[in-house]
Length: 160
Figure (tube, rainbow, N blue to C red):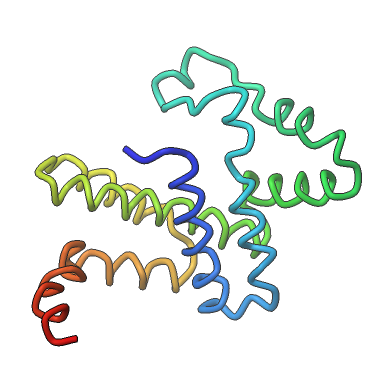
């Protein structure tokens, strides 16, 4: 499993491309939203579905507490965080799709290492994607071998 930092870095990169593919006029805003979307986990942790049945997370309070001292910049980030959590605006939808797509990519890597049940994760994520671009990227991911990019590097190295 990846770290929050790895997840956020990859999700942010995906967010940029999704925003561009969707024609969002300011892709850097979507990237900013994704960079900060898991900021609350620094204080409350990342609760999985079973834990959420028993624990009341005050992630919004944690995020507000973290951002309050940052004044205007903090208010801007809080707005992006809310948009991503609420998934009601185009920015929020694209940001959440990027977050979920990154999880699907991680699940595919796990599946390719031999854990077949990760396919359920990918399938479930597919049902949550809202944008045509996210669905297109998921379909492309499904048909791509995650290891193919490095196959043959030794041959290329010898040619240089």
